[in-house]
Amino acid sequence: MDKFVNLLKESKYVVALTGAGISTLSGIKDFRGKDGLYKHKDADKMFDIDWFHRDPSIYYGAAKDFLYNMRDVSPSIVHQVLADLEAKGILKAVITQNIDVLHQKAGSKKVLELHGSIGIHRCIKCNATATFDEVTEILNNNEVPHCKRCNVVFKPDIVFFGESLPMDVLSEAQVHASKADLCIVLGSTLTVNPAAMIPAFTVQNGGKLVIVNNMETYLDDRAALKYEDLGEVFHYLAENI
Image (cartoon, rainbow, N blue to C red; front, side, top):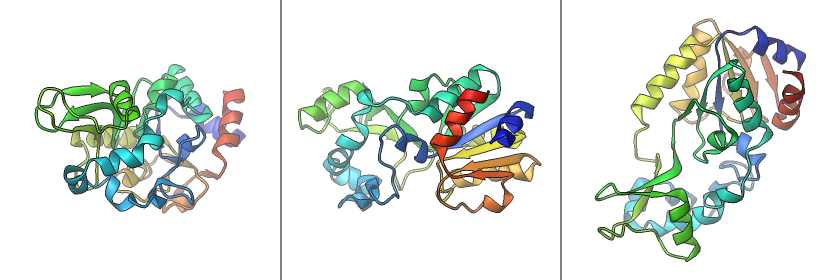
């Protein structure tokens, strides 16, 4: 792991791509693991935009205990170290596939959320907004959150299947990855496009790649270093950078 430490210290432009694996250290279920959210009986429907418009209770019922308990969830050691690396000027940006806002909770400032976040919800008719806390309070009363102005459901600012990623965020992420001389991939299997292609921009432009993930990725053979245990690696980084 000293090799990883040295790479971080020697690199001039470091970016991180993070996936659900880093949030499992905070106690959040991942999506594709053996106990992941996709094992839910309505998994094929809960993040589908057509089903959301048809019956939003499917999403809110499945996500209530998975996403809407964030007030009780603390950032993991990975979130904390990434925020510290940014504060030290080592890390230029966090590009995340996650929607749980734990990077911001840890103190990261430059966070590019490819799939949006649950921090804000919008009325799908008038675009009025509700905060995460407001929606959580409604869900705790076993109700689906609706706009008080027009009585239409609130939708979280996350990208559902059937929707396009925010192109401005994706473009900015690609620019950062292209500039990077080191990209670190953390807790992602790199299977969901176009997010999965972002580290390739670093590699194609001569940068180095470090992957920390307990499953294989399509870029493993291009990585300068590969580790499996996020907790072990980042506790080591916390003590040595």
